[in-house]
Length: 129
Figure 1: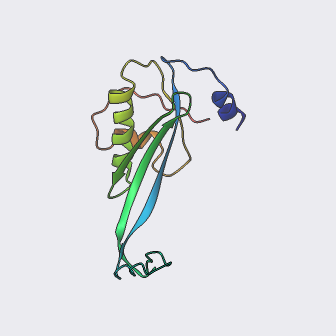
Figure 2 (figure 1 turned 90 degrees about the horizontal axis):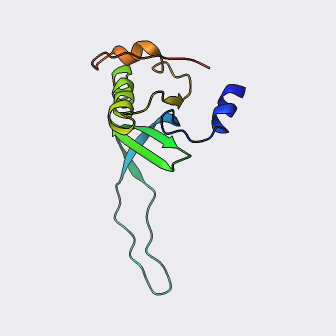
């Protein structure tokens, strides 16, 4: 934990940025009832009945020292999806960085092997704190 706190307190370094990464599965719902129209001195109202309409996964990057955020919505969360997010990070957002420090939880897809599934291999150094 102290290693993570040390990273949080470090100065911004364009060649060695650090950022946070997480994902979240969200249930999608749709309304099944019409709005209840407004009446004099009464606002328009909604019925809270809904129908489940599937799920979606959100991948999120956040670089606090720059105020940068990126969210991508996918249908699932697999090792290959994780690898594609990391590839985007390296190739599109930090192509000139020497080292990118990603602070993330210990989800089962957050392992070195995931980085070689579904994307073209390139040299990766994966260090756990």
